[in-house]
Length: 312
Image (cartoon, rainbow, N blue to C red):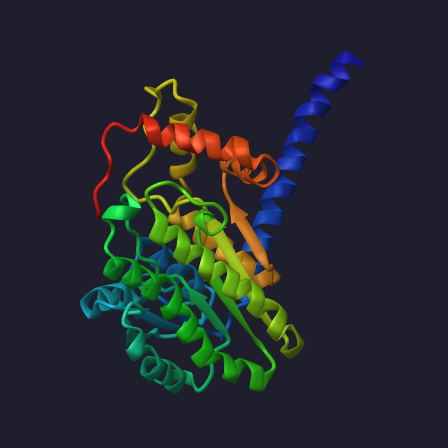
């Protein structure tokens, strides 16, 4: 019996591994086929996450409309996508549209330009975001308003402009790439957290409103989207529970992982996705069921900070 188990166990593990690999490959191919020929509008396509989303959806055969506020960087992304396109698979040349969501007054005109590209929009991915860090009393009201324009008013203005087309065709999907701070606030990020709470609230309400028209609203909330070149250092963590908590909270996820999750969200039409390691997930439950303890831990962390961050 013992000798038999020695031979059977490795074969069993190998078989399970093979099945998992096949499942992952089929799931990946299925995800790409779900966007074939679909008109996909992507905001802030020139960011790290935007580039990865553009790569994934372009490879999947989507008719991309790439939006960004820097034309040269849009052209660079365009060249990169064309250069890596697989000639054996059907892909479409991306359309480029200049868009700065912090300038809300220009969004309706840009939305018309977006609709003119293909005559309709199947999937809108609201990815643009602006960050600021600093104590609330040192952040100017003008900067607060700018953050709200970029992270809230800009995305909802674009959504409202494109939504009637989806409703009239009774099809479409709107994806909001948000942040954990749409769920809970972090000290020294008042304006950013407020804008993310507002955006999440808007799209949660919108989801129920447009369900009868077969329009899907999805939110994808990672902790933080990590830089391409910066990985969390190992060790040297200070003993403070607050610092341990926020180090784990801020390390975030890689843009490639978020882009793949956005693709899965589109394919499966998932309503809400929360991407985080166990520490932020635990924080969410503590914030909900033990708010006084959560607030006490956060307050202790603020008191421990020797250097108060300035505006950035």
